Amino acid sequence: MHPVRKQRLQWILLILVATSIGIGLVVYTLRQNANYFYTPSQIASGVAPLGVALRAGGMVTKGSLHRIADSLEVSFDVSDGAARLRVHFTGILPDLFAEGQAAVVTGKLDDQSIMRATQVLAKHDENYMPPEVADAMLEAYKRPDERARVDEEPYYEP
Image 1 (tube, rainbow, N blue to C red):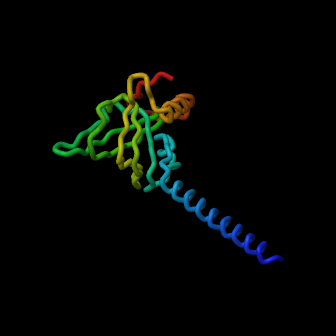
Image 2 (image 1 turned 180 degrees about the horizontal axis):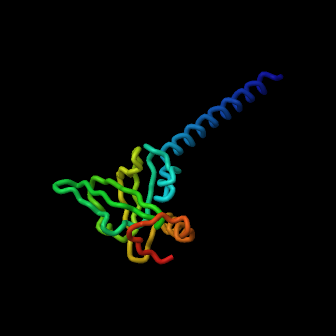
Image 3 (image 1 turned 30 degrees about the vertical axis):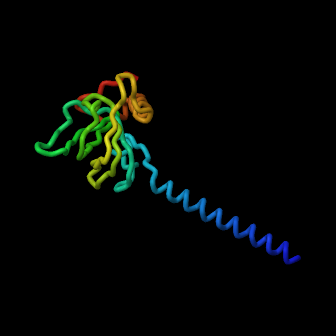
């Protein structure tokens, strides 16, 4: 093989290896920072991983909001109509946050299946519901025979 061709081949192989390593690192980093959305039913069934950043959402169950005096700590339940998820959050809740309204929380699940939220998002207006929450609730309401009993159903019209 001619020395010039050999040198070109070596450069091409070096560029391919460097590009492959770069793409691999980018994909690995993006995978580590992804927040996957889970419904309360999926979390109750054990599908969601523990100790990993994830998102969950549904309707805030009426009567479940509890504020701790002299603190920014709050706890509330989020339901998709089939199961409830207990959420603990320390911080200021959004202005539109209310019982009976849609909410999406970001955080980590502990070993007791309680979401330790770092962020709480509330719906924008009376007609908006996050698409993940709307799809999850429609799916939960399609399977009434599999639903777990919830004290008070969140009001949602599919």
